[in-house]
Amino acid sequence: MLITFSTIIGIPRYALLVEELMRNTWETHPDFDNLKKALVRIQEVAEFVNEQKRYKENFARILEVYNNLIGIKVSHPRKTDRET
Image: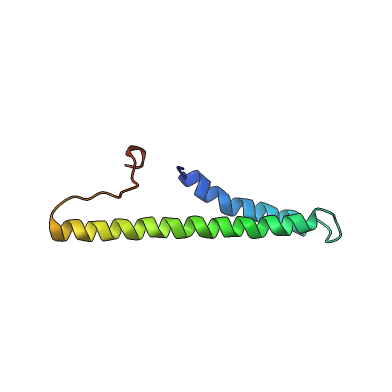
């Protein structure tokens, strides 16, 4: 699964949209609870994507240090031609 930069940017935007919907929806409205659940799920997905991004960046740093120490170029095992 390829996650693009626009996808990463879009996730927080969805959270903002749902928050805006919640501000303009009565708490007694039948959809209000679903909006709350959606917001929680969007926040969980955003956190997961951020964690994966940090992992990838840290792994790239480790490979860079390793390559500098060993002198052999090692690439990320999950790296595809599209990501280069």
